[in-house]
Image (cartoon, rainbow, N blue to C red; front, top):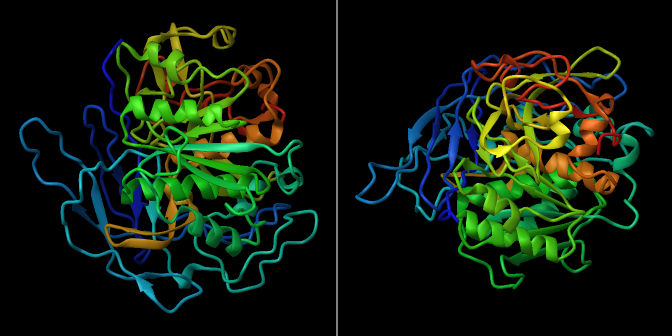
Length: 483
């Protein structure tokens, strides 16, 4: 058996300033540890926010972003790795649209504790009230069942995601029996329960608290003593909890916090999540493939009857583990924008989504049926969802990290993994297994046919095409039929 390898959570952090975006992608890895990866993007913001046709979206789309990148860690000492995280500092403070107090990303480049910036597949950005909706956000009956507070934070909210993925009619109803979505992350978010309540109150979602039994937080052995806290993983945890809330508001949520970002500890947390009755488990982390990973498939990710999702990564073309495991649904990423078509939305490949052909895992039978040439290994991804930080989601996190806290905007395949896990929870575990059921029902997905995350051969592993492609798999959710 191989020694424990490191996982990384593909993180991206953004701050708001004018309408331009700067930046860089830096990914750090450490043996046995997951490291933060932040990406700062320079681009023009999408067209102004608007409610998509029939979608009932509430004009809470991603804003223009920008800032100045500042390296977090200095040169590594002997026997250690460096975190290549970059803090995006803001020339303009960000603030909660419902408060006069501001939360500014400080411009210091202080070295953060390397209790490990883990690598969640997430992307952050703080928000300004000038980019929020100022009109009533009560969505007409039949569109979105929840009444949000006005004005809304910047970034896609629950009604946007439910509209985009044809879930408006099912997200507001409770799965029977009530499903539990487990989130596996590293380290403790001490404010997880409070921040979850803030997010749900903001969007008019049903309460989900520990006192009602809806929300539960445990450590990797199932106990109540939390591991040490970590600001980077805290943001990942908030992102994951909020995405479950957005897509399956009536699901119960189980947060399992691993003691560290080693695969061994994350795997132990995975087993605990399964043992505590999770319907679906989301994993928003990943690391480089390694020769002994198949042993981890059986030790940690083999839970028949439970849908397990894993983010494909945020570094563009290339395969990460555990997304490469044939026991999980590998979730890629898209750029999701409003459109004046019947669906009300359009998607292309997000350039940061991970994809490719595994170097160590054999191709499962459900992929062999595609009869695609050029890859004899397990192909990544299987399905996908919004992941582009430019079209990112609103998240609330009060545990300050590098000066950023409050309402933030995230992207990365860390957004996509809990979205898809929540869709599985709404649908119930398919009789033919996950992700095999998606391969048997590709017409129940929105096919993503354009965009690229790099250069490769064969081309379908890095380029959006009709049918299967690496960055987005078979496509994105169109209701529950593929899940």
